[in-house]
Image 1 (cartoon, rainbow, N blue to C red):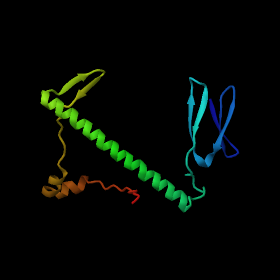
Image 2: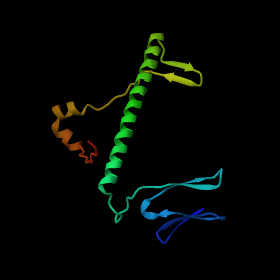
Image 3: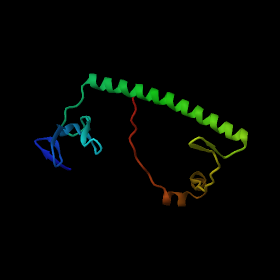
Image 4: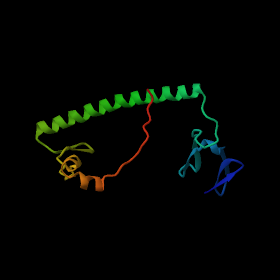
Length: 144
């Protein structure tokens, strides 16, 4: 299968067919299903420079959807944490680090590691700390 750019559209070509997908400024996600010998396309979003910016209504819709998904994720995270706690408590009551339950193996064991204490190094040897300290930058995204 080959991929071509023609007339601002993304074309996928195999030996049997040509598929005209969507305009390039939508950056679609293309999935080729070998079992069914077909292409599935998941439309992307406008991300290319020069594409129209979103209007206020689109931003509001996306922000609302983002908040909804984050709330669902938080609820799922709470349930995951509760299930993990239940399993850990059961292992601890039984005095086990590992247990087989059907096709699953539940493991809760100690992991030992050695790490560098950067706070102590900074307090006791600031010259050495400054010699090896690395600054990094990032952008924080939030919807409040």
